[in-house]
Length: 399
Ligand code: CTP
Image (cartoon, rainbow, N blue to C red):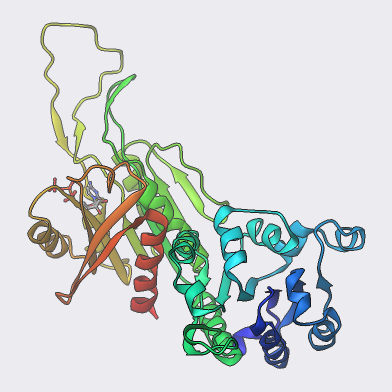
């Protein structure tokens, strides 16, 4: 488990009977060379003592949000920045609720809320609590925030009941963390390019042809690629969306500019074309504002198909080329046609005939068509979660 060496891991221990197992996690992580700091919630201290945690971790245990000593040495924001990764083990139903609400009422929830690092949650609780619809709803929210959930397992619990709710064993948790770090480390060497948003095709200096694309799905894909370690460039048409600074954002307006920027940023290992590029541009844009008149004929000509250009490039075709297909009818037939005609490895097709899903919406539901004729449906989820699932498939194809 060589990826754990020198990694800074912040372990948040919540109050549950499984809290004692976090001592084993700390012991194993130390053996593999990780640097550990810990946060103990107030109720965790009912199960294990700060002294036992410090003795094993060799690092400080943080307990209170506004402790003068802690804030002087390392404030709660610095603590979340210090970590390469946060592991919440065990996480109780109560802390799951706090994170789902975005609460910052204690040190643990504040540090997690303020974190820009991967967060792993390891639930442990009674089977009824785990199966309760409110816990399930809260977990759905946490997944949509890209928290990674490990377990729980089925087995006999401390309370004597049997079922799902038992905490995953420390060694298995650590293997999952190591696998994740290993895939991120591999991805850091890889470059990704994403196109997103609409394009504006000018008729005159103040009027243009555009479409309803919000760019949300493409931005979420870029964020997910970056979270997964890829060096990510996002070439975006006009949107008001914001993106993290680790992502190389290139803003463009027209399809022509998007094409030029794409060419400049090749070669890459994976290219994902989510932009709703206008198929046509105005043949001769007027240099002055066109005056009102009885009739106006605008001559249009085809834009370059950027996806097609990249996927058929002789020397710089990325290992993985992924296109999007927005369809209102015959989704499967049209998507497969596009997959073949555009020489893609994957086509992500969405049905844009439904209201509130797909185009200009927060939710999406897609079917992925693969080159080897397989297909896979990702059911309705917010665009961030759909992106994580798409990038999981990208990781599998590239590694
Ligand atoms: N695309 C592109 N450059 C273009 C046009 C499209 O890169 N000039 C990409 C889109 O980003 C998307 C895919 O191609 O990944 C969409 O294919 P396309 O055939 O353009 O879809 P539609 O515009 O929906 O086509 P049609 O009207 O034929 O359905």
